[in-house]
Length: 151
Image (cartoon, rainbow, N blue to C red; front, side):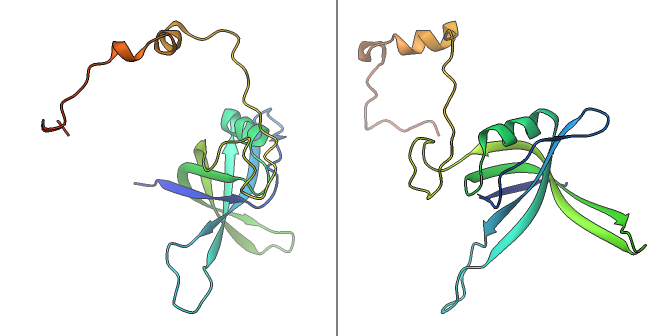
């Protein structure tokens, strides 16, 4: 199984590019703190190369900026190429399938960055959503505290 899940901060603004065949792509690096710290030392950070394609690339380049916290899910890929001098080079990167917002709400700038993100205002809420927003406290039943919960 080849699955990678990471959460870190973008080290630069993701830039959307298009291949010669018209496919959107963005490459970026995220700084991921290690989960442990040796006593008396600073926390270590790994810089992970990532690439996203098509709609995922457009989503990341549109809504994420340098310094913003991002969670990504994908698979690890190792590829090789020959540089200009003819030497074989290897690149290890995460091919992103999904990207997620993490951390504080976009309007809250406590992370030390200006996200520039403003959620789009929906033109019309779907019927399922409007049913939940029009409910009242009387629509719910009080659960006794002494009963065993089913989970």
